[in-house]
Length: 146
Image (tube, rainbow, N blue to C red; front, side, top):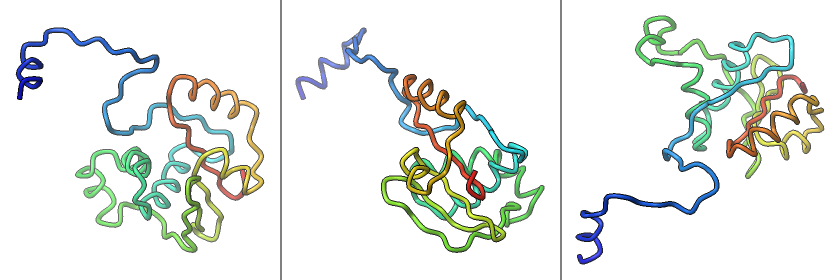
């Protein structure tokens, strides 16, 4: 009661927080690709794998590929043009992996990449440091071990 009434009269709120305040939802902000695949193809493969996941970081990756759902339904039909995933596996606290068209795909944090012995490109490490320092969650996508 009393505190809620006081809050209604508040004109200014100061936050003692060093990072930025969040919107409460994840979104893809930046992308960097370090292989010969087209960036859209990488996102398509990632979206196919993430579509099997209920993790909060899955939705923005799927949304990044699908864009406007209405446009995608008109373009691709109800299958969204995503390839089939097999051998889907959640790596608790690290990410997920599976096979798409017979190729191993892993999506997750740096710890998952280390566990799978995936070499992290020097520029990727620089992005990891820079984006992490900005408060972003960095997700790696490895296709066929790279």
